[in-house]
Image (cartoon, rainbow, N blue to C red; front, side):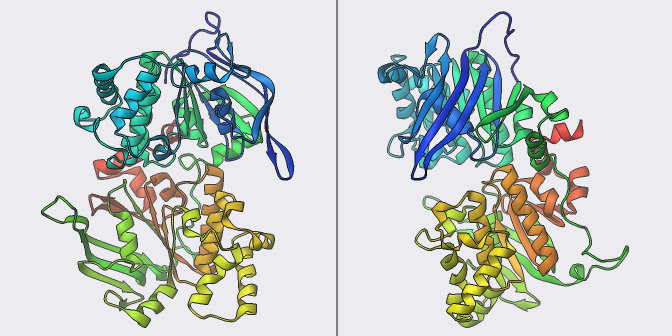
Length: 552
């Protein structure tokens, strides 16, 4: 963290006073930001923390005056030094955006033009604001990419966004945002979709560059643990208002507002373990039958892919052995590209292994086809990372949840309708949502619908592939609690795929750590947290936001 300027010596670079923002909707005006005050000084990092809908991203949009068409500032001011941004004309704002205020958005693919090289896009930012042109702009783009931590920047500058990983694309956006040495850097959930290790590298790089330039940083995030590690001060936003603000360490150790305490309790790096080590009702020392009867077994599975330009196939999964006991949660954790999602597809029999076997409930299902495979898929159901992509936007919630029953010819229209309502109740969704479509639901509600859909056929195993990684910490906590409750009520087994060891500790009974297609370590989560054997596991643990706070 940077050291903030002495408030007595210098005024704020960015000053927000009495800001109120309203959105026009079919049901009338909705006030999203209500009376917000916020100051940020040069060299200071201020984090604005809150769940989706709290107003934090709307606040950031006001700084750049990039509100949606139905949004408007109805009161208050946003000042950048002596300039009142709320009354500035469009010509002035075009000069401010990029030159005086840099922006790092949440989704790097929406912030980059897919038909231009990354170098051309950085050069464009420099040229628009008369910082450099031609070969000088290209040379500056290379230098910025190097400073953002990209290796071989001289080659990378001529590549397109699709040729970069998510973390690399986010570094490109950081380079673009800081190209004109802005006074203020807005970072709106800049790493929420990244692996924890990549997240840490990107945030380190952003902080280092901003500190070198003396930029003030406004970090928008839903994770209070991450904010406390990265910011000098934290402002907690709830329902459009800032309900608490103060030094990061003080906010974590002495939270005053109930909502702040809720955010702290939901942060995976600070939360307490949710699952029992033995089934409910089991006596001390009792043998857990699940440990003797694996429901799913992967034995020596290998999966290779042909890659254009490579003479040898890419081995994505390499001799993996894995067991999921009855009524237990087994987690596979690793960075992007480690092979964990391919392992999930093999477990679901969405792909065939090149070597090895998949056994389910003691039967070899590796070579099953047709009707016999159909029976297996009734017993094993998936829940994927993006519920919006998993649900047909044309279907109502009722149609989406009932679809597996229709496909497998279970019941008739009346019994399916009854089943859907029971399933919605089981995942704590009101029956009134049955007639809505996915775009009318929140992210957490959509994921609950996806879980209800997965439960429609009474499966024995649910494979959850990064099913909570894109959710706010409060919504994530609700989904994890739901998982644990359903496991206790229904005896479900879970294969839980994630990049986040903090979440693993909360819900898993056993964890497999995966790197470069291989299992490098496995065991009980608590033991693994206390004494990891592999350096790679230690890296994953060290990258958990809030872990240092939890230990202190």
